[in-house]
Length: 217
Image (cartoon, one colour):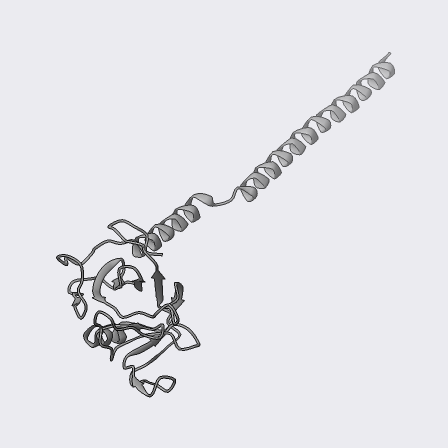
């Protein structure tokens, strides 16, 4: 009887040990799975909020710098030969130039603030001024047109490889025309030339008017 009891008792101990082992093994396995799942979720969770906020701010700053934030207080339409320039107190920002063929006006914006404007001389039907977006390709302070009898074109800022440029040295008067270039008064040409860099954008439109809050590009 004692032997039988001992055998049964030994078996019970073995069973209990096996069950305890299974329990702890299951608990450890469950903990491992929980830790692995948590790590997986943590690893998979993208950091979107900070990056999204940074991207949104960068986009808003870009839009703000290329949005009309000020228009020069010019009374009435700009007349031929007339020019305006006021950059006092205007913060640094990207330079952007607009020219409209219908208005026959050039506007200079820095960070969205209009700092310069003038009436311009444009091309003809046979030699039209092109529309579109043009980066300034290169600049030439003392330039003459070999193509058109060495005509002086000081403060030239070239927009195309075939010679279309914004330049001074022009009689900006009614009835005068260019061979496609944008001729501006020397006073504005010299000021624009001084601050413009290669790569700055010039937008030439045909009948588009900008108001406060409008996107320039």
